[in-house]
Amino acid sequence: MYNDLLLNRLVAPTDTEDTQINDLIDEIEELDNLLSPEAQELIRDLRPHIVTDDVYEGIDEKASFGDRIADRLTTLAGSWKFIIIFVCLMTVWIGINSYLGGQAFDPFPFILLNLALSTLAAIQAPVILMSQNRQATKDRAVAENDFQVNLKNEVEIADLHRKIDSLTDALTMQTRLVNALVEARRKELNATVRLIEHARSGEAANGAHAPASG
Image (cartoon, rainbow, N blue to C red; front, top):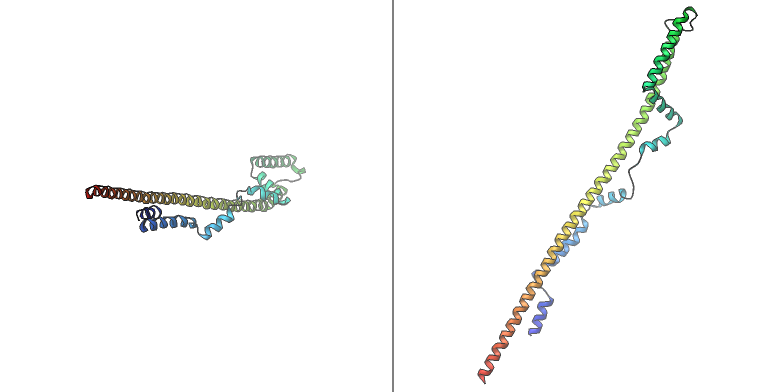
């Protein structure tokens, strides 16, 4: 009978301790379901792809010949080089026609020069607008790419936070589980020691009564 009682104490913990340990195990298993299905799907969609891209290079590769000409003319028209050349040409034009007097090909008030300037302004305005439209397209593409990069970074960081929290919770649960198991085994060991001491005391008492009876 004593051996059976000792074996039961060593093999099976008490009901309260067993319930506590099972609850801890259930909590550890539930840590795998921290992410919502929507977040998991978003992570699966974004993670395999590299969203960082040189948007300008891609747009420039698809640009037509007219688009490239518009960009170059706009760059030239917005430079000091163009202003200096333009002022020099106007000065030379006015100077030559003023010097030639009656034989000038564009005498004062320089109607031909005004026509040339008006034509240049009429052509330059839509060219600049074309270049600005292309720049706006580039800016929108850059903004969209930045949004995708920021979104992926945000999702990845949130996922890392959840994983760190999950690992922290798992370690906490496992520590509690180990402590519960250690406490259960300690109680079993103490109970076993008490049973052994009680059995030895009983045997000693029986041994003391036996000579007295004899």
